[in-house]
Length: 81
Image (cartoon, rainbow, N blue to C red; front, side):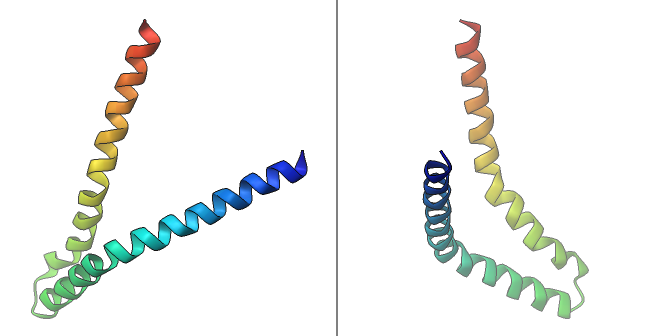
């Protein structure tokens, strides 16, 4: 049983690493641009620019949260039957 569990962990860890590499390559340019833009704005005296990376994160998570909510509602509908 320990060997099967180790194999499952290794597969999950590897797939997570691959997913992180793929997502990082797609997201990194946007994150870098927002960080540079907000640091330039902050250097000119706009202190609200520090919130831009936070809002980028909220925007990136919004679609995932919406999808999870609709999946949850669908699961509740199935359970009620």
